[in-house]
Image 1 (cartoon, rainbow, N blue to C red):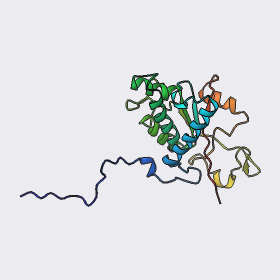
Image 2: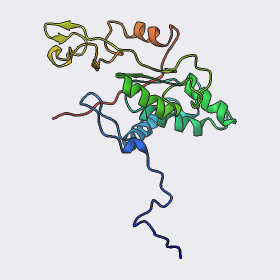
Image 3: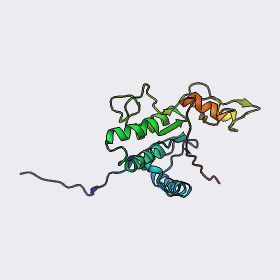
Image 4: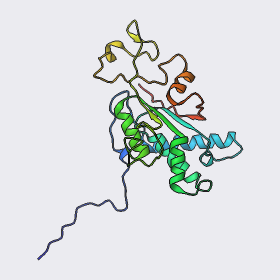
Length: 214
């Protein structure tokens, strides 16, 4: 005699989004929920259409996006998803379309090694952009277009002269993360971008999400 036991609950036709399930890592690594990222991108698309004669942002294969403070990669992932749908007519072949988007249109800068791996996993489906499991092809290095290298604060009288961080809190030695945003720890952002992505790189959309603190 066989006995079949049924679980008390089931996920009927539901595929949970892992980015809704992860907890914030620290005060400097607060993850934007996918639903909020989607609403922000809706507003962005509406503003783009208003400024470009009703043109769809997601149907333009020349537009470049930068998330200079990427953590979970949610903005880059959602942008990629929308471009994948919007460019279907112009680039009919799906693998070719996705590869174009990932190599030519979406870029990010992470603040820690862990968030760089998480962001790449969200965008490339692999923590390394040039691995056999990555959905992007043609990257010569593991970072792809999601850059991370340790960035140091510049301490002046106990504060970072770029971001104002406390030296007492974050000057902790090489074994711990600095949580320094490479995008703003520079005297010239254009020069910094050229160092990271090439001298001819220009971005049409830069994502900056801020949070209100009490």
